[in-house]
Image 1: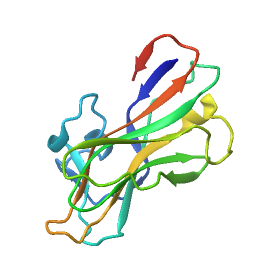
Image 2 (image 1 turned 90 degrees about the vertical axis):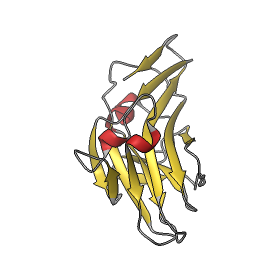
Image 3 (image 1 turned 135 degrees about the vertical axis):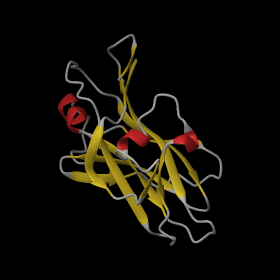
Image 4 (image 1 turned 90 degrees about the horizontal axis):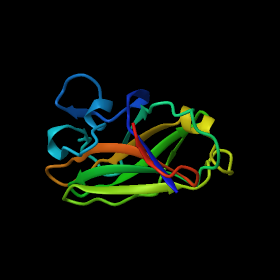
Amino acid sequence: MATIILRPNGIGIETNIDLQSPNSTEHWDKVDEVVADDATTFVENKSGGAGVWQRDLYTIPVYSSSSGLINSVTVYVRTRHNASDAKASIHTHSTTYDSPVLGGLSAWTTLSYSWTTNPYTGITWTWAEVDALQIGVSLNGSTAAPDWSRCTQVYVEIITPFFPRIFYF
């Protein structure tokens, strides 16, 4: 099995999470680091209401040099919450999909959700679909005070049976 890890490299079709820290450049560069920097850079839903979901989607590098089967596409999100939740998000074939609620923890925690098939087609992922994929996070608002939900890292892991090495981009 081989693992290919792709990290955000640009703005996707949604940038709806209302805050970022620091408040400069773009949202995607707050969540693209290889080693999570936790409270140093992050995006934050500070909407002030439970059930108010905000989502960001990010582009990832094209990895079209591959062929063969794809076992799964797993999105990882490193989050911290004050009484709220997060979901992993993907955008494929002009449709956005969120994972089930991954939970809300008061300490920085890496959570993930795997799609073994493309949810749009219902069949195994293709490399063209991976190349066009956008990944992201959905953060839920909270009624707790102070209310916030943060994400500091997002990346996707592609598992394939054909390569003997790990690739990071």
